[in-house]
Image (cartoon, rainbow, N blue to C red; front, top):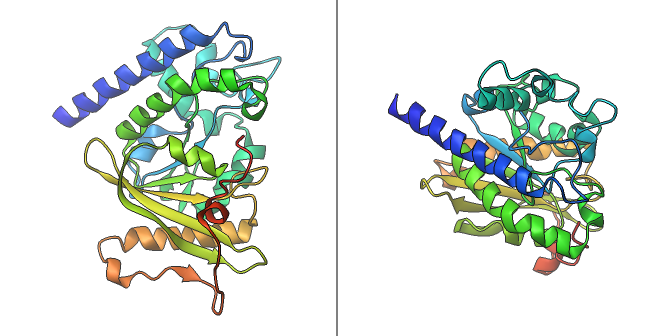
Length: 288
């Protein structure tokens, strides 16, 4: 009971911080109007009940999450009068996102195939239910992140990145999946427990690598981050079938975490991997 009360208090504090941030930024010309801050996308109740807690990471919400002429069609609860507690209304809207016409054109090719390999899904149809978060800011922008000015990005990141860390501390995921320009990894400031290592290598002219590190959250929980280079979409340099295979491999690692000696990195036979960290992480890619 005490744990539940503490978690509820943390959630209430986070909601206030997210909405305070939105109120302070909503009049900026590049913030989508009308909109709201997105603490996360997905069903948090089912996430917390999942045997493996998985969080995916993007940069910021899309303007397509607030489409015209019905900006809140994906967040139906927010269209209703505040006939019950506002925090409940907000959490209900977030929880129902993948039930109420989600932006499938992005989520399905970006993360869903890999999640399925982990016996997980955004859509509450697997053993594990994942949540999506955004590391740069919880605010939808127009133009998209890549086309914002450096000044706008800096302004949003200054508040958004620390807030994302607070959210991850609250969610306590086992797995964090991120695929973006490599320089965004430097935004993750949790204490490193085990530094980057390659856990999956795909045979091709330019090998595709999945790299992993372990970090410690404020509670002491250790989370594993998995990173792969992106193209137009997260993990877009590999097809759906291979994304599924990668997900299965990560699931195997997670299940064997208590027996590290049983784990061997996945690599195609006969493949010799050469290259600097810049090749592994895409440091030279344009930050979007």
